[in-house]
View 1: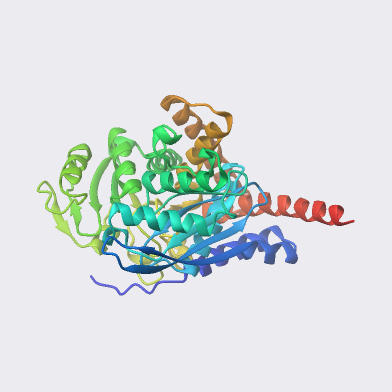
View 2: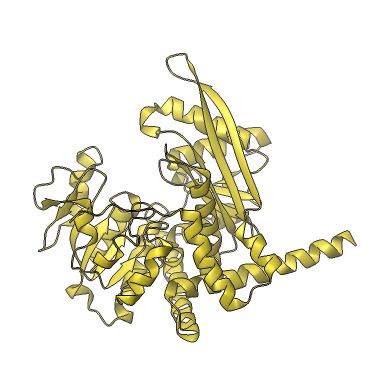
Length: 425
């Protein structure tokens, strides 16, 4: 079966869900318009000298969606597909994600149009430092706190922190999260998003009275999120029968040995291609397998109105941001597919980022067990609140998540407006 996927603008998907929740809340029109739009939308251009002596120009973005709940927070992507509409949507999702989990952050996102695989470490460091210089008045522990995202990691965050610190004449570890441990990073941060996805998946199974040991799972994407989601669920006894990365999709109805696959992946230049203990299937076939749980953990808009009716999973847990477009929501709901939305399901990353920022602020270092205990507590409370809200309003968990987030941010935004008016008077 082959279906051409008609993708929806990710920002429009966010607005569709936002408007449903805003209507239910009867949100004030002025606040509604303010929360639909970014507070700041910054485009930067800069150039670096490449290893071959030639100069190359780059375009980058930083979108600050909202700061009503606290400093804005969000990752930085290095990818050729980075564009303003995507970054705007991701920034907004960060606002709602922090609000749903009760994290005192607003939302932001950034990116540079480039393919990081085409540049050396020296060139990537130059790109990161130049981007940081361009945004040095935007970043700050109490203003805007970047983190890793697609194409970036602890190295880039370390360079960003170092450049920001040099520009400000002192070490400022709290300006970024997702750093190496020796630069002020937190234990548990690398695997936090995948760990969170696994916690939420187990809670969803309990909700549907499904037994973990009898549960089958397909994971789309074997980057940081997909890999760790698969690993933690495998450790809990779930049967991971399919996984994919950009090169191949693998299927074994008896279950894939995830620790063995991870070892193979690490020894095979970060690729699962060629793994012998599973059959090759198409990437599309993975999405439509008859499994209990489907975890799309790769990119936006993989399930849309053109293919949603073919999904046979009982539960979708969104490991990626925006993997289900808004035009697919009604189809999945009609087919009784429980969708645990991204702003809840993959909030483990921002939660442990908050823990890292807090440790930097307090000059503390938490144990791995404490980080994971706190993460589990926050996600359990958030999950319970979302499903309780869904029952009260008779809506899907996704719309319930937006109702919770919008209410929190709108209340804080209204107070912010009052204080601003009082200050002027």
